[in-house]
Amino acid sequence: MTADEIKQASQELETRSAEDILVWAADHFSGRLTFATSLGIEDCVVTDMAARHKLPLDIFTLDTGLLFPETYALWKQIEKRYDVTIKRVSPAHTVEEQGAHEGPELWGRDPDRCCDLRKMQPLRSTLSDYDAWVTAIRRDQTPERAHAPVVSWDARFGLIKINPLVRWKFDEVKAYVHDHNVPYNPLHDQNYPSIGCVPCTSPVMPGEDPRSGRWRGSEKTECGLHFVKVRT
Ligand code: SF4
Image (cartoon, rainbow, N blue to C red):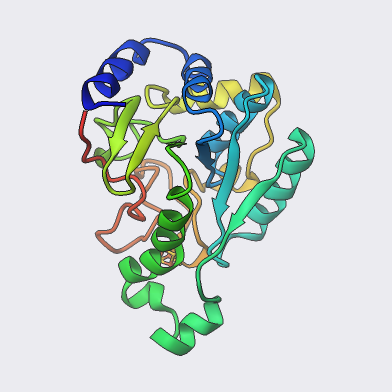
């Protein structure tokens, strides 16, 4: 797609439902489309929609080796519920090997490098096999996501990025999960609105920003997967 075509598609899809956007993506990028699930509650909604519409979507997750036991359990639960395989994308090195190369607990000293090694590099390698990827980000999650288009050229990874839930509020996510009995991580009900790796995720107290439990005490707010600097 040209830049103008991407911009036009995004404008046309801006007022369409999340399911319409997903169907559009599957139609336009059949066999060349993937969905990166982080197994968060929004990702569970997208997985449910894709299954409901029987969309041919390759699904993968970045397994840093540092996810919560509840996240690994949810992974299995989703595969069973929807009869899908969520491909495991792993970093080049185990946590132990990384400790040997970089020193222990890199996340506490240099979380950007840790995210680069354990998320960004494996993600870049995986996305190179596709022409488009779907994510479950929402505009009101972080300031960096506030202007995320429905469809954009993702210059960081060199493919089209499609965000079907981008206009959704958290209440809509909760309503969908309730109405469709979608499985989700039980930690979300234990003051973990955003769930990542164990060392970098903490519970959020009432009144705090929902993302404040990620990399608490540091300026970091994103792994680097979803910086929105796009050609539209
Ligand atoms: S979220 Fe934390 S532990 Fe996970 S890859 Fe990033 S810095 Fe490392």
